[in-house]
Length: 235
Ligand code: CA
Image (cartoon, rainbow, N blue to C red; front, side, top):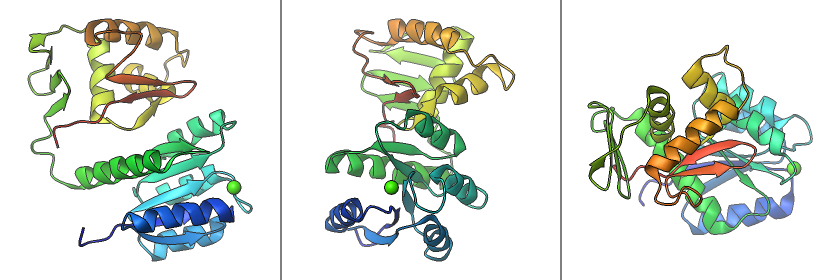
């Protein structure tokens, strides 16, 4: 790659910081880092990174507030680094505008995959939307213009609600969508945030879509958080 992507790492634990920085550099990313929120925010503004890796537990400020603060002026992809016990914080972080999260301890390949997906999504959203009228993954094709969904070349019929859920996940493929975000998108801001109706619809979607609904290939459940749809291959 001739143009290096710059990644800003905001993390107060030295060991994790060194590990991630070394890994990123071997993958040809440029890395800058900050060990607290104040420095992180100032670097985010001055260094213009392509992506931010953000630890939620920082000494001087809540990571969620860091996200809110960055989102006031920038759409730069943010991947949150969180501890396993921070389920609620993960949801809050995603709802605050984080693009994804990764749970400690994590493997290098998982981190790299998340970074590539987030960078690809951000370069896509700044590009013209021409050619983005189709979602393709494995045997599934969604034609947004014609409102036609095929699996293995067979047309599959979905209810309006199911179609709305499926296309929202597909347009955000690769990204975790929280239950609340999905419910708000489909049923509006005043909808009951009870997940039950969403789960019923998801079960129906999977029954129509998946070869084996118990072992989904297209839409994955992020337990306690939301859903993630497999990346669009049509890019
Ligand atoms: Ca920390």
